[in-house]
Picture 1: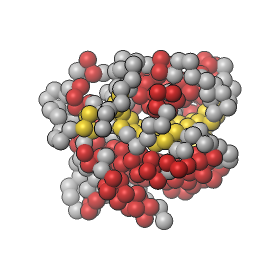
Picture 2: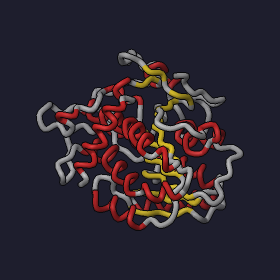
Picture 3: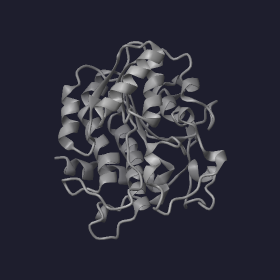
Picture 4: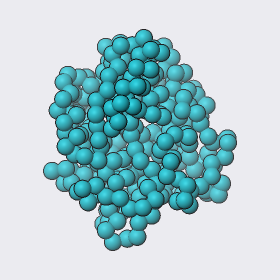
Length: 314
């Protein structure tokens, strides 16, 4: 299979990849849009004319971001809706309140490398619950709206962190094995990629394209738990601004270059290189940041995850 490349790269910005795109009449949801990559993604979509809903936990923070986006873009069709991804009832309410077609869904929100094991009231490990299960439930609940759009795109924001772990199906929630922050984060990010693989196959006849992306190393609130977890150092050459980090998600969401592309994983505005073992982390290299593990693209794993996820939310 030939890997997809584009004229854009690691230093491209979200505004650059969306240049010339007209999103007038399109409706978009961006989760986790009250800060960081979510804010920049929402801003660029609004700037290109889309109606944008910021799906956030903190409605006050979201309202401030929405006001700033409206002021900077002139787009008055930017609004806020509450979404707590760790709470199935909140996800169900958000989806139930949506009416009409949905053209763009960017599943951006997440948590990273929690230093201690945390569980939701259902007993689910929090990173897996927020990063995957909440987004899975949301996207499945919005399936009809996506199909109604006739050409919808879903972007699952994953990470090179998926290389830390496959999904350990026999003990996803660390009921038996010792908890470790990075394997827990890693399997949740593997789940983000596998979701794209499974949804792309299931929903192709509905005209819904689903892809996963790695935004790269961006200094956002997502990294707030890294100190004290045995984290790694990223060299200056691999660090990105928020504008650069949002480029790959926006590329998959709006670019004509991605027409007909589905079920794939991208980094630095190009399809990631499959590898048969985890690249060196000492120091982190561009190869690590732009690679994808075979277990994250495996169709059998993707189907197993879909069935497993559905059973949690039944």
